[in-house]
Length: 106
Image 1 (cartoon, rainbow, N blue to C red):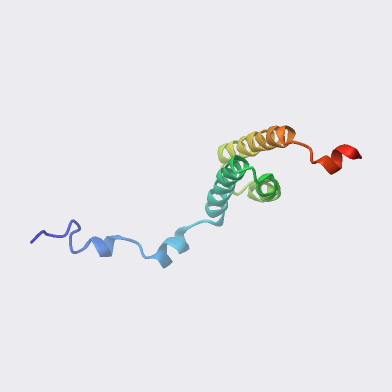
Image 2 (tube, rainbow, N blue to C red):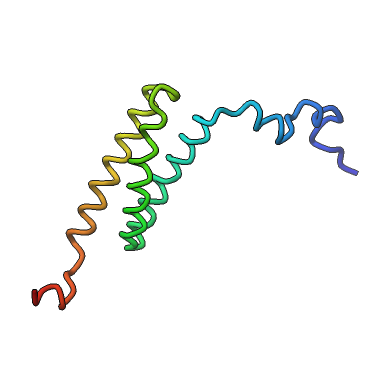
């Protein structure tokens, strides 16, 4: 029989979910969430769901200032740059979309 890969006391060394939450900072969670929003925004652009990408951009623009002073300056700079790049990709995608016939007539 194969022995367990973890020693018996490995469970004692691992932090429980509750302990991890206690140690986590809200700013860390927000940074991770906003990074995920950038990725999701790009994915939605790839699927031609511009309205969803725009929603991601607006959420990023609204929440990034909340992190001012609570997150490392470098992380905020990177987040702002990623948001700007997403905005440029959004603008490019929207500009390439065909105009519906009813809008051409007006």
